[in-house]
Length: 275
Length: 295
Image (tube, rainbow over all chains, first blue to last red; front, side):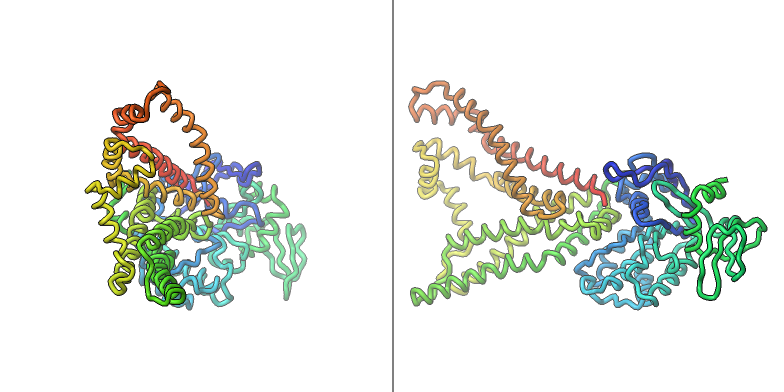
């Protein structure tokens, strides 16, 4: 489990994260959402040890990430939004570096490469950005780590690859893993992320499972106008309207509508979910 | 806990991967410097000789030794940047920092690669190709390796040529002084720690600066050199004045004082200690950079 307590981080004088407190539990794929510049990448890099917290603490199974102990690093993988074009074939890259992760599975690497329709014999510095991203995704999944952090993994992927990515993430990850995916493309990941974390400037607006969200908010997809809707948006063939769930009726959560609702009613949503 | 600091098996794996990535990033440049340069030099000089003097003659030992020095310097300057400069870039650096090996393992591998493996490979390849050229074309004279062995023998035999060189360089015509200095200068350790001293600053520059790594390293080295001379020149002058302590003594007496001084007697030891301190300072800088690097 990852325990984050009163976490603070700033770039110079500009604070990015302030008093962030939350726990990330095993067996879940967290979706980390937020506007540009709210600190999604900063949070991910703090969690994987690329940055040092300026205030508060992060503890991952007893490790402080910034110590970068090999025993900690071998159970986590961070997939950056920008990936390096290395002068090696994808297969050689996997063979050379995979052995550092105890759970690395070469068969899984080639299998995921196949699912993503990527050629493992191609040199990485001759790949397009999308192909390179797919190679790193295959490598990340083949590492079989307990903690997997992905920053905008679907950026640069074509439409079929996004579906293949969703399939690969659900099929090739460990049952007990903690996966944290930061994204702007909520539709790319709508069916796999649960719980949802929404970051705002220096703050966490929401950290809840889809079940909890559905218990407290109602997503209406009919053409009828809902009185007291917190958010409404016209979509082809109807509306999406989000309102407080007073009747206890279950509904399918639309993450984009949820995001917009949370942003328009920050204090109300925080109040509802922090009860 | 100990396993998080150093593990032989993991270090072996890391070193092998480091070797592979260094070769992928720098192999071509290394081959160009070590193999193509001596061949190109030979062909250019021979072609010029043919054009000007209408005779086929390869480059002499002096020119080849100079070219070898330039090639090795180019290698030292470029190798660290090509092999490790990318760790300051977000794309590669994030991966490198989160690769499950300890800081100590990454540090040792870096030092061994840039200070020993890289230069040694370059030297062997360069001298190897030079030996082949000289074996094929005898107009080149001695190959670099044979010339080096001859130089060592000259020093060991204290031949006239070496003595004269020292007389001319230091303008001290005192046989005892020259012999003692030569004995000290023939210690190989004197040059090994100097080799580290040339490589380490460029490695530190490669992982410290985010851009313009080589140029900034040269500027930083120049600045450090200026500061060191400002600090140490007055100290050395005062020390020399205190040592002689009498402006009316003859040159021979001054040399005699110098020979019997503890500093001169322990020249190699003092040089080794001072070079080791400087090298350790650069290593500490490299360690600190690896420890605090963030992305």
